[in-house]
Image 1 (cartoon, helix red, strand yellow):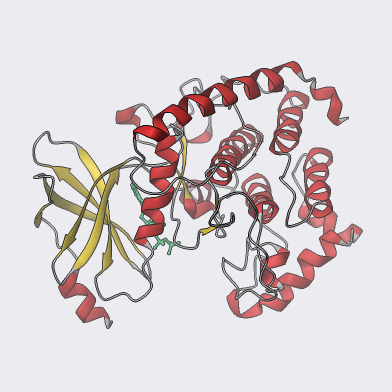
Image 2 (cartoon, rainbow, N blue to C red; image 1 turned 90 degrees about the vertical axis):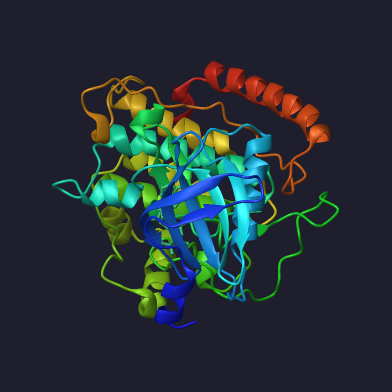
Length: 372
Ligand SMILES: Nc1ncnc2c1ncn2[C@@H]1O[C@H](COP(=O)(O)OP(=O)(O)OP(=O)(O)O)[C@@H](O)[C@H]1O
């Protein structure tokens, strides 16, 4: 679709859309545009609540909105606080499909580059690392891989909703279910898989056209966390058309090239971050990553640097931090939960909640000295 055709079908400022639920939403402004369509801030006319709508042109052959919907419904069924709640949906005839969801705030790419030295304080980077890891573990628990973990796909909530210390995960356009249809086993990896992701953060597996798995989302998370902490990655000057160069440098890290490791970990808590990276390089496609081990490493870095949970984050320097710090699950995949979570699933939610609480106790009992 050409951009002029796109402008005709996509919403315009002040337009009002009626959904089958009988709700009217008025467009306030465009928040962002992607290959699939666009995201807008809207006001629900009934109660004046500010929400977001994500639209996908009806003509798009590759439908990504359904995947967004499946993931967000799954996250709702486990009562995650890290995903936007879906409030409504509609098909606007001959124009676009849309989902209405919670409105959130700036993403973690914008928050970092706004800073004078283009990096978060170590306290903030580690807090963002913890919350984004919790997002990834929950996504895996409901049966999906993200396959495009990057700072632009994590955002903080709005202060009006008292959610500006909560990190949300966004954009499931490249997500993939990793369990078989019977939801018992991991899907057999394809021999070759087309590249999915963003060159700067993509795991080595993706760069080598291998099937991605849970460990690969965490490898991307590691690159993102290092960038938050140090302000840059060694391969920052390379773009998507230099994928081979970037792959070579990520391979040098895996091969323990000392000068590459020195550059990669500049300004980072090297001991803890390196434990994580070496661990990720030691596991394979079928392994359930040990999310708690990764979290311990981050906690260890926090304790070693004397940070407290209440120390403020960079985007809200005058208030104590109140963000969630877990609990984290075992990563044992549940059967993925399709759109329209029903009553039968409500019972399962209780089980999941209990399992999470047990997980929390275990985390608290273990000593960070395990990392040294
Ligand atoms: N619920 C929301 N509330 C506020 N802003 C949002 C919301 N969802 C998405 N956005 C913003 O809209 C933009 C596009 O969103 P999203 O990442 O879902 O689409 P995308 O086009 O697939 O992204 P990209 O192509 O940049 O990876 C991003 O800047 C994001 O921060």
